[in-house]
Image (cartoon, rainbow, N blue to C red; front, side, top):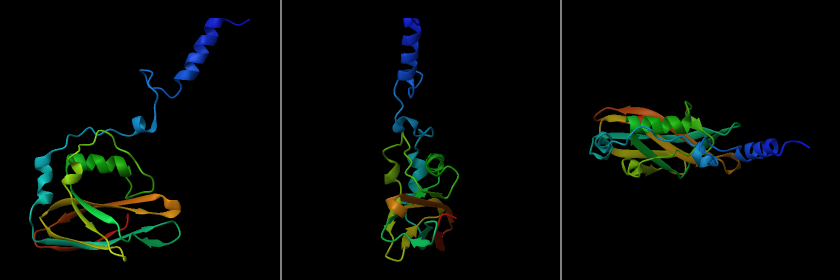
Length: 171
């Protein structure tokens, strides 16, 4: 008969599979990247200010077979800060298109309120009016093939008085 101690060790090891060093079960949320940068409301506030620029464009994505229009979706504009750069870095992992939903933990509850929001029309066209000069991320999501979420973002720089046309296409 084999040693009962060895059997207990093996059973504990099997039970601990999928646990962290403290013995807690690792679920998908605990595997999600956690924000390290601190949200800075002062550094983000310029997105809410008044400006003289217009940012317009269209949102499209390639579903692997053809170009699709991101119609009737929300398009957000976030200020580029250390916080938003880390956030989008986690979401997109160096790519301009994400075809899966990525969760980021430890996000600041004020994050979304320091952004501008508009909607795209049936042709994927969107417009932001009265934008102040600055460095921004444009971000949107659309429903792609097999009902998967397709997320797109692009970094833009807006000059005072500029009419900037952007193609938000994941390139």
